[in-house]
Image (spheres, rainbow, N blue to C red):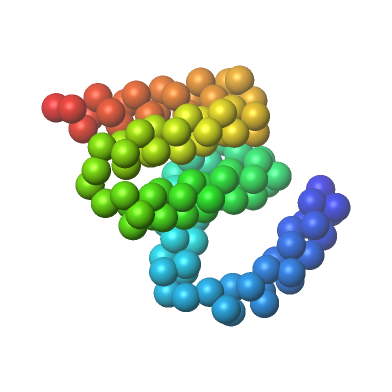
Length: 118
């Protein structure tokens, strides 16, 4: 457990120079990624290592989505590209989560989709 905290502190110290160069758009994405990861952690019960990996994955996914929206606008190609990003995200997430956690994530996603469909 101590090793995990030491690694987290080292990663944070390496990230400080990069975050000071980031623009406000990057900060907004980081905030959204952190919020998304917290919500996911509540339903899937992530451990510290998983939390960090999922947060990075969420940040990458949100960055890719923002880039694709800027590049493709509202075209049909956007939907195709977003589907590919979502597929890669789900694949990478499945590599991080335990089967029980992935089932909880899938169930929460289905619940959100069912709620939004009403």
